[in-house]
Length: 410
Image 1 (cartoon, rainbow, N blue to C red):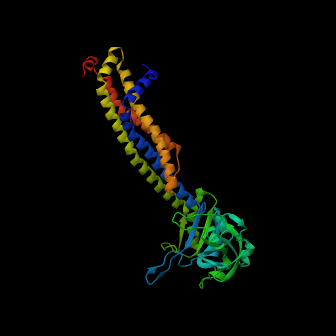
Image 2: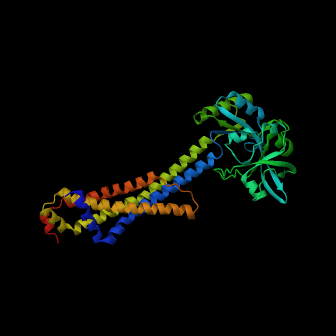
Image 3: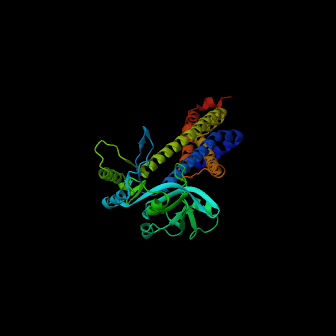
């Protein structure tokens, strides 16, 4: 008996008890659907985290000024301005793998346009800051080195500030007041979205560094050239670790820190953060898929159970087939095909259910999902493997029946 003849016989046997076959497939359907939906949700979350962190800038190191301790209380990184503009120039000049090193300072201020106002973050930065952050323009222009040198009162706005102050009006060329100082809007930045930790990157006004120090945020009395952070863009992603090591060594030398003495700055390697977040997301995805796979195993046990019942019910039929010349392997193939057919049909329905569930989650829960073809193939293939694995024992039991005893079975 060949496979072409066995398949119709198996299908007819399954159609005799439609409800029982459908209930048997239910575990496989739920298992396959759950695996696809859970992997899609996990992959979507991983992609969202990657997108959010990469929105900060690619190949980016951020050096932050150190902390200050007052009365035994540490106020956190950036509370003491231990970095300077000269540090940024030295990093860019002395470390070949660094493309740009952009110093910046940050503060909060009320921005006013007409009768509207908005409290936002104000950054003072050099033109290289936009290169370091991979930040492009939506309209207008960047401020230039001449603007920075001349402490020009020009500003670039993030999308959130544009929405709050201008609505649908074009802000380029308009004048806003930041702490009562008039600034001309020369450009609007492309939308960056939120960071991985929920900070709105578009809620920002960026002005030339010298202008921020002299007109808005003020300077450090101890060192007028002090800055809060330095954004470093590295030329090649493969050199991030080595560049971080070189930056740390250079700054310790420039700050006259002795061996064993703590750094008066901190370096954030966004590649490390990205890898850690991606690894966490991968672990979560595998965990969700493993939990969902339990349904497939339960479905396989259901298939074994029903196939054993089927063997018992069809004992006389098996005896008749053997009596007219069917071999044991023909009987085994027939029952294996039945088990495999149950699992594959359940797998196909489960794939459709999983895809529908994924799109439903994306639509109603507003949760990112990413459909992976590999997960569909894996879930469907696993469903087939479950059918063969759990169908083997009932099939072998049927193949080993004694024809004479089978014919006399009541």
